[in-house]
Length: 142
Image (cartoon, rainbow, N blue to C red; front, side, top):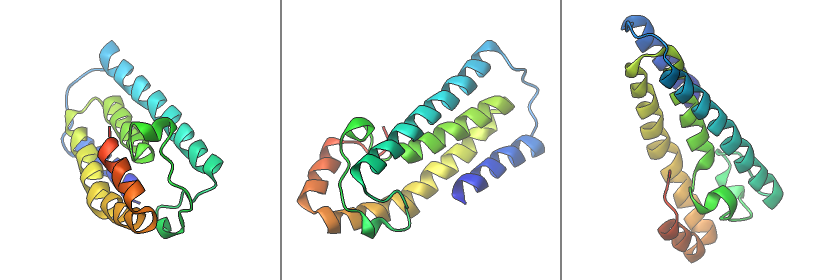
């Protein structure tokens, strides 16, 4: 829902405040690379969770059975959310409106405050000191 709202926000900002920018090789490259990176990161992240046999449902964090800390999770504690943020960057670049970054910022702030931090509390309760060491070693986003 937050991702969909962020897409809508980026589109709305583009509609209300159109910019006279044209698509260039740079904006096309940013759009394509962020889109491809989002896909690769998203798929690899999901595969790691499926391989570990733990939940991918962000609403049911308390059912997590395994702390995934390898693969992309050795570099980011939240690569799935990172993939969604990259999709938003791609959409913003596609529209060629710098105000779209406000939609990305909204997503990152909202997800951090209302999803990631509560998830971290739940994972701390489940995995304790092991999760605390993981948090000290790996950044929240990148």
